[in-house]
Image (tube, rainbow, N blue to C red; front, side):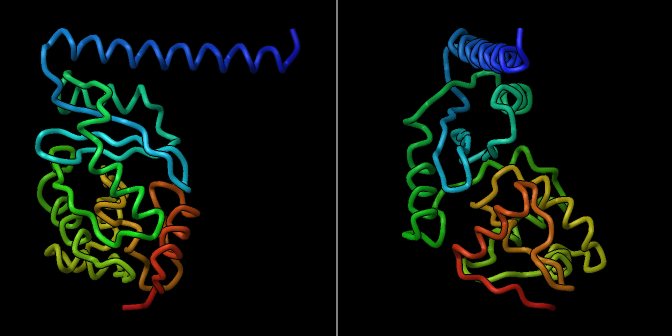
Length: 205
């Protein structure tokens, strides 16, 4: 068996395992009788995203590097075992994301389910970040100050890295005061793409 054959076999096995994991989660939700978390995929210029919605709002946006089965298992553990693919539940946020990436939308009108966010400082950081308008940027220190801890710029960066709902909570709009665009949980090239998409210019404090 060649290296190529081994690669194909390994890929096939991974895909089969992924499908099986998704099916197990779906069956668990069906047995429970109700769907508490609906999810669907969204094609975008920066890769295929996974979005998940509850009755309270958007709870998760996952990047392509995050294995779908892991995301769904986390949702089943942290939110509810009643997780099921649901184009209907996710339709509104998917349409808004499509419009955003096509340059037809500058803000999101979707409620956020904050239950995956650590309460206290982390949540305050994300709430302040959600207020940064399209086309603008802020800095880690500024956001930390607005969240109540002006000397906690690094902790603010950690909170932004853990943001479960990027784009809607635009963590890409927070940059270092020293210049550059800084790090990004969804990889720096995506942060650069998003800032270009919005016409934002990073400024110092």
